[in-house]
Amino acid sequence: MKLVVSTTDLESMTEGVPVVLLRIAGVAEVLGTVGLIAPAATRILPRLTPIAASGLVVTMIGATITNIIIGEYALVAQTVLIGALAGFVAWARFGHYAIAPKAT
Image (cartoon, rainbow, N blue to C red; front, side):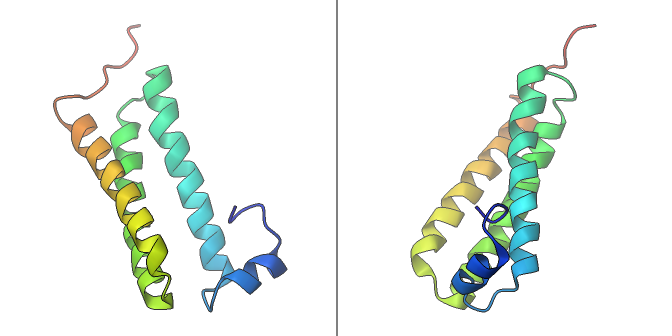
C-alpha cells in the first residue's frame, strides 16, 4: 500500500513520518517478500532467502520503533509478529533447514 497510494493520501495518513521514508520502507518490504519466496521456490541462489529474512527483521524493528514513536500501539503487535516470523525463517534457513541449490 505504501507504494501504490498517492503522495497526498499517504501524507494525510502518516502522522508526521516523511513520505519518502514510507516509500523506502515499502520498497524494502516488497523486495524482502520477493527475496523470501523466489530463491526458495526456484532453488536458484537459495542462500538469499535467509538474507532477505534478516533484512525484513531489520525493517520490522524500524517499523516497530516508528509505530511506538507516533503512538500507533495497535500496529506494534503486528510488526513484532512479522519480525519474529522473519527471524525464525532466517534462523532456520541459515541453520539446519537450509535449502539446497538446484542440481546442475
